[in-house]
Length: 191
Image: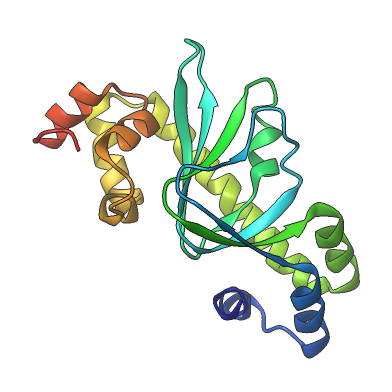
């Protein structure tokens, strides 16, 4: 929980009352590797801080194949509902790539905290805007030629290359490429 509070305090410092409320309403969840946390029919009406681990969010593309939309890593805020609204006609899933620890809060609790604590509302907006910014970057990535996609990925998402849980085939899916093309452009064998 300390990492979560550090993250929040970097935006706007928390007061004691808000800190106590967060301690009461956020649940700790530990998940094994390769566990589905959000299935295609789930509402995703929660938010979570990734205390440790790596996750992938994927969508069924127009060809019926899974395409990765987003990776979440230690220190990220996870907003399943943020992805649902713009992509509500598509099936979305969320899986752990490693053992993962989350600090989770239900949407109802989140909205109550936002209404009672204006500073927490600022935290919420900050994280939500960050998630939508990622969605915009992802959409720009999808319209570029393959070579440009790889360059953009290296510039904007360097931590993905440093994370051992994220393999080349994950990155290829994220870019909307096949594994062979991605590996050829990257200059090596697929991991």
